[in-house]
Amino acid sequence: MAEFAVYPGSFDPFTNGHMDIVKKAARLFSRVYVLIGVNTEKKRAYDAEKMKAAIEAAIADEGISNCVVCVHTGLTAAFAEQNGIRYMVRGLRNNLDYNYEENIAEVNKLINPALETVYFRADHAAVSSSMVRELRLYGQDASNYVPAAVLACLNACEA
Ligand code: ADP
Image (cartoon, rainbow, N blue to C red; front, side, top):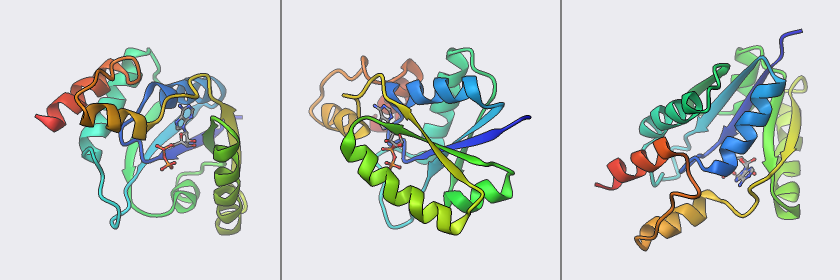
């Protein structure tokens, strides 16, 4: 049976750690929606539409063709319901991620009981969006931590 999954996040920016999770999810599910969640009260470092284009290019560079990238304002659980998605993918780097994710999963289950949260363990646990933002802030090389298309996006956004 064809199963769809949603992988939500801020992706501000999208990193090699996120790509690790996308690859794992794309192998298991027939379609993966990478959902850039936009919170109107939280200012982003990098423009969501530009990040969307960069993520699409990075995923294409990996030869993955069953992913759709969307920018979304609102609840992931509602997006899942509207698009016939039964699984929500999240990545786990450590026990801090686990505790945080479990709270979100519980709330999502209340909003949409048909939505099951699944975790993939991180193979790039040291990589985070905040670390990349920090490196960029101080003019350091971040090319080992983000896909090439995302690096080009960061350069364009900061120009
Ligand atoms: P959020 O604001 O929703 O936490 P992020 O963009 O920081 O958004 O992360 C999205 C998801 O990706 C979360 O499940 C997070 O735990 C996971 N993630 C972040 N960094 C990594 C990494 N290096 N490896 C695997 N998963 C990661």
